[in-house]
Length: 203
Image (cartoon, rainbow, N blue to C red):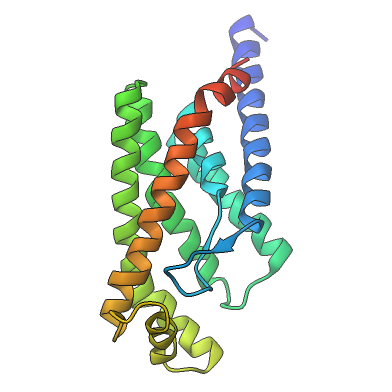
């Protein structure tokens, strides 16, 4: 076996190890979640995407997708599902809508400016995708699973924000702000810690 092959194999093993470590961290962070004051309590904030973004910035968008997937699987195994996997699939796609654009743009040109641009694109992408996913898939599925009308969720939102009167306003005043807030906070934490963590990852 050539020296070049050995180097490539060692690099591959190192990347797999990093992906496994970041996936485990993301899985733990996903479990530690809390509701926010301006959205119904079933929308919970967690920092698991920080670990996914760090992996995406360090190893590329494909690694980010893998870490996001393993994170969801860890949560699935530990907490199970009440939606037949629909909620988990949506969480995976919503997470990817943030981390894939961000890590792709940053990986093309690794500068602070491109990181900010990538994260900004990712935040907007996540907010739009989450709005569509909740409107067309998630809320209808949850209503069917729990045997309640969609108005039930609208009423939960209205109890917090009087501007919420129907499904459209629920998306506008609860879902979109929640995902924008989460994206901004997660992105800010990533920017603050990435350089320190990447130094360790690239050793």
